[in-house]
Image 1: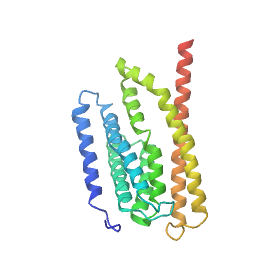
Image 2: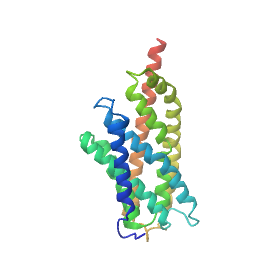
Image 3: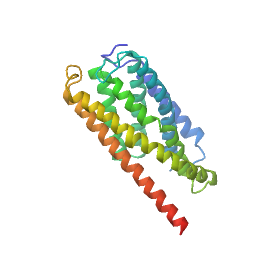
Image 4: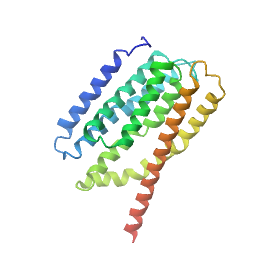
Length: 242
């Protein structure tokens, strides 16, 4: 795989996500309201990306005996990066078409793409760190997307409301542990390694500083989001008790 050019896999992955999205929008969710269909279709491509990405990234990491925060990317690690780059490109297209004012989500995806693309196409090193973070980000993906789909229909479908009620506490707890504890701990190790300067010859200082900045911001927003959900759930239960 030529690391100096976009491989044939990236457009293929993008086409795959595009087809999945169209099938979700025009077939799977054809009976949903126009307001909900785009969000539901986005959830489906997120599911198509998230869980497979966890297993692919885990294999890519474990199959590299020289892995560390500054190790060169293997061909399979580059493939996994492209798999995720294609997803974020597709989801950005989704937001630009249906939710162009959602600057926060579009910005999140753009900065995430910056991290993945600089790792894949600019420095060719550091995929170990990025893929571990990908695992931490996507290990909750299936649970989160099922919860999101159930939340979207809980007001008019009793089963969806029940799924949302049952799933919320374990999902919130799982997400809190991954994003609130495991993520920050790994980023701290990553920061200490890069701060030592041992990887500056392969990952320029401005690159790893930008990576850390993007990741810390994303984790902070995630913690704020899940905290608001905990508060909302507690408030609803207090109202029920009253």
